[in-house]
Image (tube, rainbow, N blue to C red; front, side, top):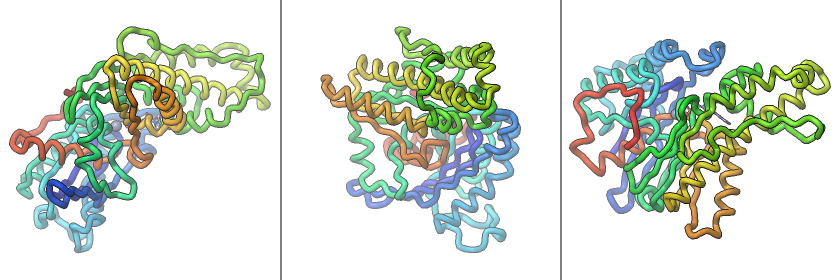
Length: 382
Ligand code: KG4
Ligand code: ZN
């Protein structure tokens, strides 16, 4: 089975082709192409993703990215400029597209395009939840082959707790069995990645904020013990599994207005030290909240697996501290297994959409193919 997947929920235009072979017992999954076109440069001046700009760029890029993906997966042999979608039907068996959550104008571009292709090529079409994609991203391999996917994916030990952290979402999800989800907590305001982006903007570090803040934080070395910068850990002890990051961003804003910090940042000899200090403390505040709540959920629901997914999963400190925490937890009743995506698959891509599409279709052939799809910007995992 060959799956063509399309992802346009935010600011990445992505198309992938996944090949599944080998029958039921010895299934082999191979990524034939994984093309991602980022719009980061276009949205950078605004410090965040502008939905209508994203829509325009997806419309412009999608046909080009599709051709590239077909070419790379060797499904398209003749030169790209000669290619017309209506005259050529590639050897694929299923089209998958993200139908939410995400930016509605951006989602519609992918859905309309996928629907047109499905009609033109007479192929079945399936809609996939973007967050389910981030969860499945932990199974994708850079060397492009997942040799024993049925055992790797279906044998993950349940229950599992998934923490999906990206620019648009921060959710804790309980998985009792494969393809079944229950959202047990989410952010009440900004997503964790959004907080990174907004704080980076306050600090004049550019967009996207996550990588630049992480880089600044890495430079931090304790020098001046007199000056303390401490930021709040919002909702860290609240009894629920919800999050709130907008207050943390405001706390950074107020910190920057304190005379001592203002003077320090204006002073050449102390500015880079102070900047790295603020970044380090902000990053640690986010990490503390994410890890504490996830571990508490894992304990309450007796989870055997923790899954970390989404753009913020690229944060090396978050990964390191999660690993450390899980390793230290080994004395407890359950042996916790931590699954994280390889760096290449932390951000948005279409391969993470193709993979759950395969599992959904193999599980339930009929109901998997709706005639028409709708963009659902708040599409909830269930
Ligand atoms: O999953 P993603 O590519 O898109 C959404 O679905 O939102 O996530 C993008 C988010 C951005 O907010 C970006 O700042 C954040 O992921 N991010 C990071 C890092 N790399 C990307 N946040 C923290 N540390 C990083 N290294
Ligand atoms: Zn995402």
